[in-house]
Image 1 (cartoon, one colour):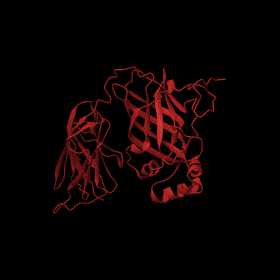
Image 2 (cartoon, one colour):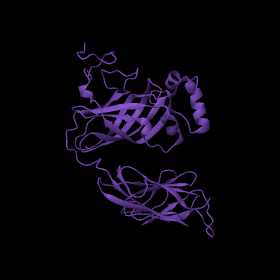
Image 3 (cartoon, one colour):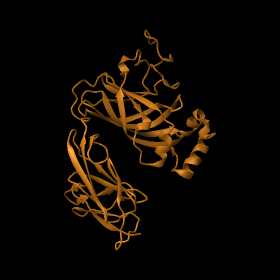
Length: 332
């Protein structure tokens, strides 16, 4: 295995004691030399004859309306140990396991601003110029009574297990009440208790337009109809100034046995599904309640305005099974 050095321009977290701390989520922290980060990709490249080229970027150069939390991804034709990110933007750099993708994750972008991130390779050079959207600017409306529907299949994934699970998931709803952010779960799903949120976290008005926290449990729609429980949820969302759009990142896990029960084509039992996941993708985990679960992380899920939770009759009831509730539904 071969080690090499990548020079990052302001793409670091500065420490007065250690200088520039470069982190690589795939390989851990790998250096603390002022201005320089050391990466070990596990790939050797031919320094005398390098033909690796940059075959794609995400986003494409010139893109507009980019979310402030989006990474910049360079795809290479072959691993390149000399490739270096060049930018004035603070952030972290990671390299995919196969060495074909270099991902730069900015950490301090501003809404409605222009930026440039470049990659200098052994035989190629590419610059991505882009501008960000207004999502993340100060709210122009009250957050209370805002609501959104998120199609989980539209989120960005970076690991095979999440991509596999994303294909069977559908939608989830989220909204803001007077003092809390609520997850209403699967829209129309048979597991959804329409009269009560299936997860909630306190609203921090100082943090707006961002909301973040641990939700516990909820439910998500399935692509084929119905719903499936979600466990150990954490979310972070950013709201547009007019409240009509939100961008959601969601992590958690799906109980394997309940996924098998609702989608038997995936496997007769949760253990069978996990054996398939383990052989091809990754592994299952254990949820906080002891169930065998399939973990996931979905980032940058766009949400469109939907009926807010406080407008759903009886949404704050604790016991209700009407699907959906009648207009005059009351709590007993």
